[in-house]
Length: 138
Image (cartoon, rainbow, N blue to C red; front, side):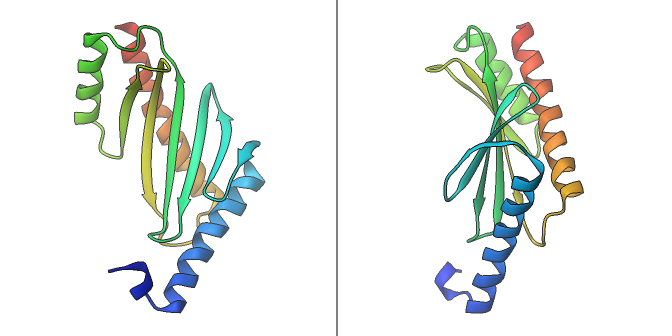
């Protein structure tokens, strides 16, 4: 179904859910920068980008940090294994900038509460820490 095929009411409902999530996150995190689709902040020892899509509606969380020797074949194989065992997100290494990242996407079917947001965020951080630790040890 195309976004424009949705009723005006449904389009508005989805926009409001995304806008509410954005406002709630701005109230609870020290956001460093933002534009019309994304927020950036530091969470733990990760650089974090949170993006929103009111079309679906979705929230996308990406956690990233520097990693040494990002392009080694062993680390690339480990990323593949991590992704095989990661249900909710994906691990990646960007060889050009030497960084590891973990990215996850969640549907926003209803208003996002602070408790639910931090549950999602902390699970993301735990998975990112697991992946980063495996790659760093390699």
